[in-house]
Image (tube, rainbow, N blue to C red):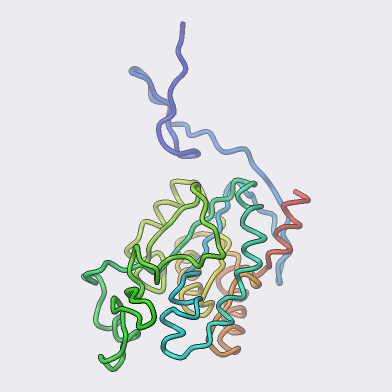
Length: 257
């Protein structure tokens, strides 16, 4: 009697093995094609090969007691993606689209953070910079495991979601993000979060350079920068790096798929 081979790894990059055989053919995931309108073209894509990357929707950037608010920035615009993400993410999970939370969360010792990076957060050397305690609650700025680097309470992280800490504006530098996405067989990435013209755009650009198909969800993305920065981000995404759509179009495409 032949016993079934046992899976080893994560589909679609799993092998099937026993003591005598290793099946490395890697059966593909069943396709889930949808048609998604964007600002430039109608896309045909496979949800089975898609993931959403939610960038920096965390307290230091989106909460009135976080670091940005501490230095005098109005974080109201950064909170705009919360409501559409609350509506969208459960549907993506139901469709087995991985939700990847990409948060800026530094090592407490800052050993991998250069002086140039630290200068962005403390240009005079006398303010509250990376790793320093916030005056209102003592949370160390953008430090992994702390309140400042945690996702805002309104956005629920489910056990099946993927969490990746980043240390640069791009989430692909010095992180396992690329390895995780490739192991999961994801080639199409939806992007959401803040700030659109900084961490979202840098991560989206690197994703494009690495060969991913990139779709920026406009209503799930925001910035505390001036409006022209957002417009430049949308223009450059459409022109050079991918496509721009929104959560309502994606939800309709899933429902009709």
